[in-house]
Length: 187
Image 1 (cartoon, helix red, strand yellow):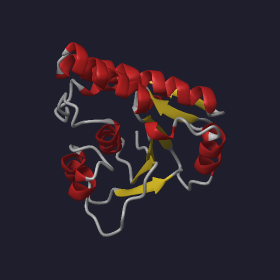
Image 2 (cartoon, rainbow, N blue to C red):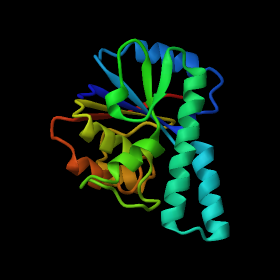
Image 3 (cartoon, rainbow, N blue to C red):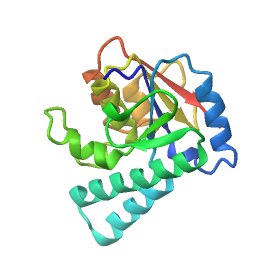
């Protein structure tokens, strides 16, 4: 299935009191035939990072726990975004609602493919959104963030500044040259 637009909703936005209403209005204004939302990690992924440091979970265990945190976040987004539902694969996306991808279920599916990303903290929902855009043969990837992307910087510099994760520049090189990527400061 082709997904026209992948929208990653940054976890840093989860504290916005009107996030559901604002997100719904913004999504309704998109001129896309099909949209998939990717939940960011935010505070739940930060909790896994803390546990990894304190308990020495290791990157493999932390990776899968962080993906479960993204599942939690997907259900959070579905609870505040009317006309949305959580799906486990891109094939489940359909018209009439906003599809929010369960990243844990989806990652288990992607694990069987040749385009598996590393299981490290370098890979966050930013890179996973690229991976979903690649798999969905998307033409647009939009990253909703708390910060803007200065026009003069490239993806490696954006990664150095912490605007995107450190694997993002590698992930974006795997995407089609026709994929249009933009960062939208949503605060």
